[in-house]
Image (cartoon, rainbow, N blue to C red; front, side):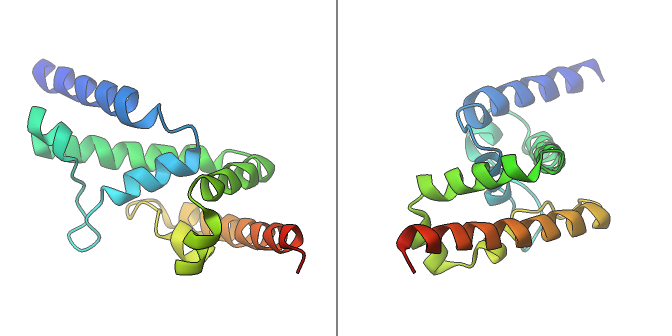
Amino acid sequence: MLEKLKIHGQIVYELTSAYLEPRKSMYERLAFLAALRDKTAGGYTHEPLAARFPPQRVAEVLETCHLEIFERLLECPLSVLERDLGEYFAAREGAALLAQHSCLELTLSWMPAKAPEYLKALYSSNQAALCELLRGSSTAHSGT
């Protein structure tokens, strides 16, 4: 049992320090973790971590961290989320990214599958409002 806890702690430390901390945006972290999820099978994979630690333990940590980042994001005021999401899209050439996907479709794909339904509903509602605000902000900047 102690060995499992030690491994868990090592995975959390490495994931956090090497992969999450360099990402300054909450949405960037959420999108990163969502991208590690196999949408068909539902499990999480991260090759560099799985090469050093038991893949099942890595998957468990990734799933837990994804849910934790999601929950933390929901605790933030909408004004903070609007800025954070705007910065996320700006750093990724937002117009080009949004031309390929709708803001709402993309951000909803970042939800953890195992999040409680009431949190998914809250997140969906927040994202609809935020995406509308960002769309309005981008059209105001473009002069249309």
